[in-house]
Image (cartoon, rainbow, N blue to C red; front, side, top):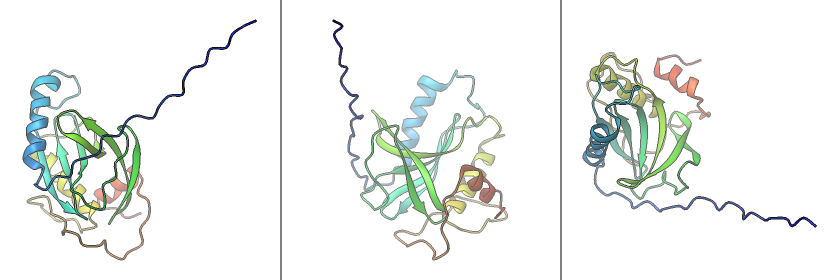
Length: 190
């Protein structure tokens, strides 16, 4: 008689609750990603050495921190817990949709041993087609304007800061696909 071996069901990944940040995470995130750039990413073939590390436009939105992280290997919209309404603890690798002024956007949870839990929406990866930091800053500013439903500017000087704890505009909200997001970023509505 053949004995059946039972394998235990895989347990869901553990969730490490985020510790809300009271202070602006810009300097903290920049220091972390500069360290990653110097120690682990510098020699990777997909990095763009013309880019540096910069946190763009981080501001509180509905009590949490939202901004764009520019690195030589990605440009991501990052959500950091500030104890507000947007944040929700989920296991690393899981995805969730957040309702933002531009519509629903998908964020992926991650948990870095150095910076703790955060969630990100990939905007561009790899960033090999960006010419320099000036262009990366323009893309980051355009992304933030799109996310917060603000009109495009002719020559952005700085990433706009969302208004703290202001409810989104009362316009029809629809789920935004990755293609739709970039169409809005390019100034196209349909």
